[in-house]
Image (cartoon, helix red, strand yellow):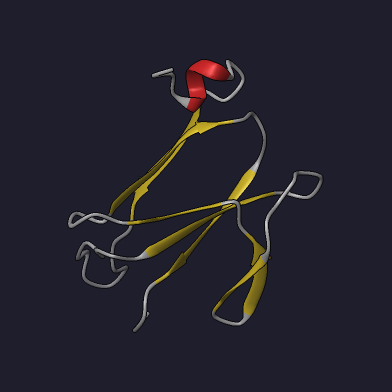
Length: 88
């Protein structure tokens, strides 16, 4: 009761975070969809489409008004981060 996923699983303590900006203007991109994909050998959910690429994502978040995002309580491993925002 009252435990986070990280406190229930001591191995799930990793963090991936960042900020999404327009490469030409430096403007923060809010409400971009960020998909986290474990590399091969990891368990994944159903395939998602991002542009022309198909991939398997386990978690998704939206960037905040400053373009920031974070995935908390991650198990050790290697991940790919995919970004999708209409118009980019």
